[in-house]
Image (cartoon, rainbow, N blue to C red):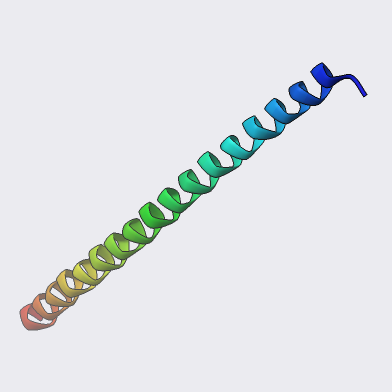
Length: 63
């Protein structure tokens, strides 16, 4: 087998491994961001529920 061909193949494999590592890191970061956004959304939902409960209480008191 041609040594140049083997070197090219090794370079391509190295590039693929580097790309795979970069994608895995990006995936890890995106999962972390997703988790943070879900927590934030849950907090906002809880706050909205609390505000809506206050408004419901006001509506009942006004009747």
